Image 1: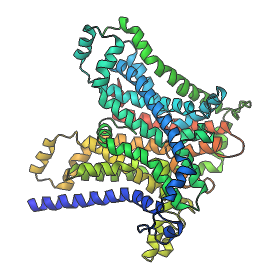
Image 2: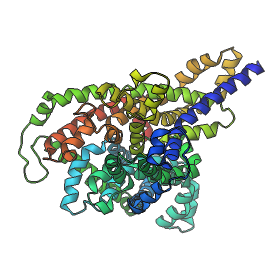
Image 3: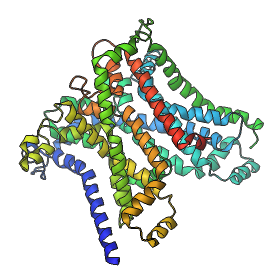
Image 4: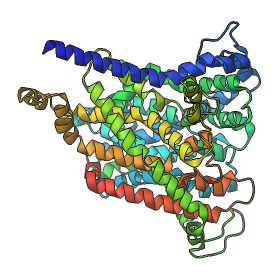
Length: 276
Length: 294
């Protein structure tokens, strides 16, 4: 019996290890090939690069494609999106979680219902509207669109979490003379930090990785996000695959770094409320 | 808590949400529905044409292509749910280092769908690694141009989407499994149930609600979120051979260099919306999620 259990554990480990390899191999493949010359890539794409390593692929991405500038654009959009979501989402979720008033559940369901509207349905009227008020090709167009897209889900997540804040704590804060804002700052935010933290990580990655919205709204070259520029780069430089690998890998790095640091929080949060 | 005294803070807390959702989601939806009955070009032309946009699109050749493609691409849903379930069952054994494996399995979800799309385009390119392996083992005949015809191109897209989604399925289903009380298993082991009996007679039936959610969420996701994959791998082509509804909206509005047919694009968008709403309503009825909300 014990031997059988050991064997089963071994088999499960082997299968999981194989899966891990299959999920990590593309990253490895991009990495080794991003350090090769073009001929080296075409002659041995599966092997380690022959020295000297071609860091030039990376320096070209930085000097010629100004990838750092693209990072800056993506970072500005993602950061403002996350901050906006947190400020607006925290207050709204606190009200939904802890106050009782007439029509609350109707309002709550109405807010969540907008979650199911696909972004493709609203993008054309939104584009026309933004171009009328001069927002096209500004960071704000994408930030506002993201706020509208992500808020319902963010509120769902935070409200579920804020409900578990103990009422006595809030009442005690009130007796101590805390104003509404102080209650949010001193009780809600510290007690709901798990959901707030998860939202920061999750929506940062979401906004960083998105292609559709910035591709439509950001028409000026200087404002483009990494993913939009990458899509253009991949279409144009098909003759320089090693350079493309460097670009693909570099664009994936920021989100991956955030994930490596915070993966425990992300996965714990995902298993609680299912986000997709 | 008392309300009257709190009216102002409550009102001000919810106001930004109302404004954002009203201006950026509800208003555009109303415009989209109304303009879907016109020959709108986004500028001045916006004459009422009745159902012409809908009828013309349904009568047109691309519509049947889109329908076929959507149905084929939907195959990814059972695949990703099934493989995700198997992976979740493996993780559920909690072997040494399972948390590491769980984190690794989820990695593709962190990488942008655009990057994944291009990655698979390269992997299944004519001189890409997949064909190189096929040639090395003497299967030159199968080493074809995968994106050269619609069926193999769609198969590669399905494969990439499944690869991308397994981690999400596994983590969500594992979350559902952890809600199953351990005593159920102990009872089953005492009753002499073996591993497979335990997996498919105890775990799966207790996961029904989570599975339903996973299936419908992936279905909606397939209808609405394939844009980056298609854009990277095939651009919906050759022709409309690999386009879906969401990709057609893009093609009809922003995608083609010439003339913008916003009227037809919004009509397709409304069709997509109706499809998504139907799926969502099925889910809410099935899982009774509406009750959980309030």
